[in-house]
Length: 213
Image 1 (cartoon, one colour):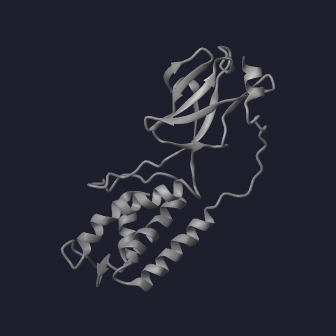
Image 2: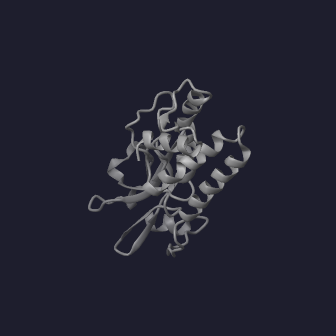
Image 3: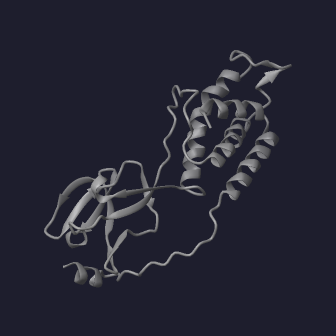
C-alpha cells in the first residue's frame, strides 16, 4: 500500500476526502493541518505493529554482520541498525547435534553479538534470525509513491489509527469508533499459538564454556 493510499483512506474516514463529489482543497478548514500530521502518525502505527502483533523477521549469516573486534575467546559483531530483538530470545546454530549459545548486549546505541570463537568453525555458516524495526516515512515530505513497510493487512489497519488520533479533539465519538476499529484489526493480527523447543542454558554458563573452550 502506498503512502497516498493511506492518506486518502484517512481523509475518507474523517469525511474530509470530498465535498459533493469534489476533492477537498488543502486550504479548506483544517485540511492542510491534518495532512501535515499524517506521516508521523503513520510511523507511530507502523512502529507499534512491528514491535507487537506483526513483527518483521530477517535472517542473516555471521558474514553479513559488521565485525567489531575480538578477545582471546570471543568474536564481537554489531547487529544491523534496524535490529529490534532476536526471534527466539537466544541465538544458536546446531552443528553435529550440539547447540552453540551466544550472548549480546547494547553498546554505543547498537547491539553487539558476542560469539565464542569455537562456535564459528570455518566449515560451517552461523545463521541467525532477528526481528527488525520498520522502515519509517520521511515525516517532513513523504513521497506519495512510497510503499509502507510490513504486510498488507497491517496497512489496512493504519488509517484507522491515524484518523482516530486526528479526530480526538474535534469529534471524540468518531475518534473512539475509529480507535476501536484499529484495535480490532490489531487483535486479528495476533500470531497463532505455536510451540518452540529450545535448550535451557546454564545460568552460570558452565556448560557453555566447557563446550566452547
